[in-house]
Amino acid sequence: MILIDPPAVSRWDRLWSHLASDTSYAEVHEFAATHGIPARGWDRDHYDVPADHYDAMVTAGAVPVSSRELVLALRAAGLRRPKALFGS
Image 1 (cartoon, rainbow, N blue to C red):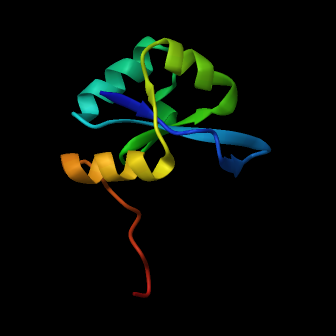
Image 2: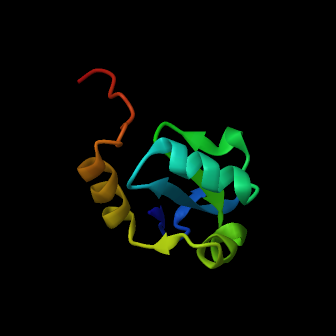
């Protein structure tokens, strides 16, 4: 299933959502490509999606979830790839 969290991350004067799959990377890559999300938006385990694309992603079938639910779904599926922490 394709999941999307609300646009809440501020970067480059925009708000961003995260688009991910709880099934496979292939599923989210296919969904993103089909719906015009560029490959450069991929960040380890999700796509960064600008807020102005949120409604279109939901209309296309992405399921709205909270940011916490998205991370928990990625972890449960074994697809979470967090950033490495340096100095820990």
